[in-house]
Each structure stands twice: as structure tokens, then as C-alpha cells.
Image (cartoon, rainbow, N blue to C red; front, side):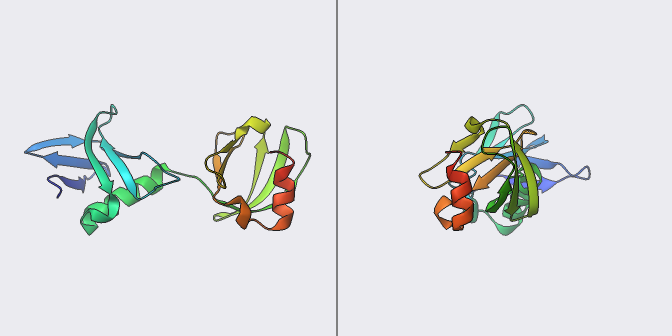
Length: 153
């Protein structure tokens, strides 16, 4: 049972209200953005202090759930790689052409340690601009993509 309200003000910022106290510039933060994106979400103020903890996004009323989802979508940008088209070199730095859920992209992998294993099958690849690309399941990639990736792991 939630005992707070969440609205968007005229400036487009989220406003958290609980017990007649309002806080502007509320920021939702996922505790586990890859492993459990719909669970364990903290609503924080502009300084990072927690205002509320949400176990499951699905437990919230539709209007509050929609506001949080919109805000998270604006803040988080993690394209998911579905295919590795080509790599310029098997030594780093190397330029990768990849197919993502947001279209084709090119990333510069500066060092092999910019590929981080999240789980047994999930990887997070950070490019030279700090953009993180997700491979949710290496085993679901096509054979060509896995072969290219194996050279870096």
C-alpha cells in the first residue's frame, strides 16, 4: 500500500507528496536496472536522499507507474546489442559496428576491460563516450557475433 502521491509539475519535474510535505525534483533510481528492471526502485530527492522504496513497479497505481516509467526512460539509455556486424581489429582500441534494439550503431572499444560480465550470459560493453551497450544473452547471438565477441573475452 502506497501512502504518497507523485505528479509532474508545470516545469516537467516529478513532485513527491507524503503527509502534506512536497518534494520537487524527484528522481527514480533502479537498484538492479539489468537484472530486475521492474523491481527495487528508489525515489530520491535532488540530493540523492531516499523518499520512498518501491519493491515492484507493477504494484503501483497506473498513473504513478507511468510517471516513473517515463522518467526512467528519459534517464536511462542502454541500447541492447542483438548482432555484432563487424569489428575493425581484434586488438584494442577497435571500432565495432553493431545492430541494437535502437538501430545500427558504431562504438569504439578502448580496452578489453570495458567489457564487463554481469551474469553468466549477460555483458555490458562501455564505449569511448561512456555509453553502455547491453548483451542480455550471449548465447542468443548468431554464430558470427559470438565468434567476434569470443576474441575479446
